[in-house]
Amino acid sequence: MKKTLPIAAALLVAGTTALALISPASGAEVSSPPPKAAKQVRPTPPTRLPTAPGTPPLTVAGAKGGELRGAPGVNPPLGAEGDFLIGPDYAPAPELNVVPGVPQGTVRQFTMNSKDSKFFNPGIARDEFGRVDPNNPKTLIVETHPIDYQRTITVYVPAQYVPGTAAPFMVTHDGPAMGRVDQTVPHILDNLIAQRRVPALIVVMVANGGGDAQGHERGLEYDTMSGKYAEFIQAEVLPLVEKTYQVTLTKDPEGRATMGSSSGASAALIMAWYHPEWYRRVISYSGTFVNQQWPFNPETPGGAWDFHATLIPQSPRKPIRLWLEVGDRDNYNPNVMRDGMHDWVEANNRMATVLKAKGYHYQYVFALNAGHGDRAVKSQTLPHAIEWVWRGYPIQGEKGKVR
Image (cartoon, rainbow, N blue to C red; front, side, top):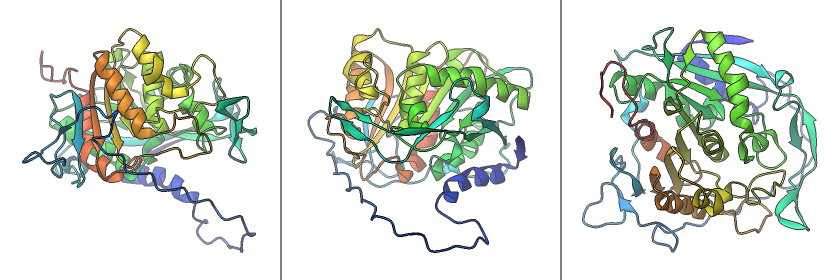
C-alpha cells in the first residue's frame, strides 16, 4: 500500500505512530485496566564531566575567555575535524524552519509487510526483559515469540531532483519519528539544498520492526553486528523506493549516507562498516556503541562495544566519514547487565579516541546539559551534522566545485 501525502501530513502520520502506543483511539470506550506491578523507574544517568579521564581533549565551540562552555547556537567549524564541546545552552538552527520561496521537496510513504521479506520474516518480540546468562555475563537469556509486522518507508525527494539521474541519498533509521526534530529533515534539506550547502539528496526513512533492545525486532535489526540489515535495505527497500517513485539512487558509495540515534546510530555505522562498498558517510546521535547485541555472537562478544575495543583499532582504516554526538547525561547501564560495557558516554569517548588514532575523518561533539538523543542538541546541530558529513561531495550545478 502506498500513500502520497503533503509534507506536513506525511510527517504528522509518521509521528502519530509513537503516540498511538500511549493514547486510546479517538472515541474508543476506555475501561479500567487490571492492576499492574509498579513500573520500575530508571535512575537518572549521572553527569559525566568533559574533563573526566578517558574523555578526549575537547575544543570548546564559541568559547570566550577560556570558559568550559560553548555559546548558544554555535557548532564546531564546518571545516574542522576532531573533538568538540557544545552547550550547556542551545538555540534551534534556522534551517529547521520552512522559508518562503525555497523550493519544497515531496514526502511520500509506502508500507512493507514482514511476510514479504526474505531477511526478517517472521519478526520477533519478547514478553519480559531477559535475565543474565549465568554461563556468560556478556549476554542475556531472552524468551521470544514470532510476530508479523509492517514498517512504513517515508521518502523525501527534493524539488531539484532530475528524473533519470542517479541521486545521492541518505538512509535514516527509526523512520521520521525518532524524535520530533528529525521530522524536520525535509525542511532542513529544502534549505541546505537551495543554498547549495549539500547535494540534492533523496532521503529514505526506514521504520524499525518494533520494540527495542534484546529480544525485540528493532534490537535484532539495529544491534546485530553483521551486514544483514544493510543487505535487507539494499535488496528489498531501495528497489521498492526506485520502483514506487520512479527515482534512481546512486550506486556510488561516496553518495550514500546513513543516520540514526541510539541503536539507530549503531545501525548506521554497522551498515557502513560491513558494507563500505555501499555506504561511506555516517551521522550518529547518542550512538549505542555498547554491548546490546542479541543473540550472542562469539565473533563480536561485546556487540557494538567491539567497534572501539577491537574492530576499529585492529582493522585497516575504512573510507568512512563520521559525525558523532553524545550528551553528558547520556545512558548509563540502563538494564540488569553489569558487564562494564553499558556507559554510552564512555563508549562514544572511546569511539572518538580510536577514530583519531586510526586517522578517520570525523567530528565528535560532547554536549553539556544533554541527555540521550537530546532534542535541544539535535535542534541546534542536525543541519550542521548533515552539511558536515556531506563535505567533499560535488554540488550539482557547481561544476568542478567540491565543498
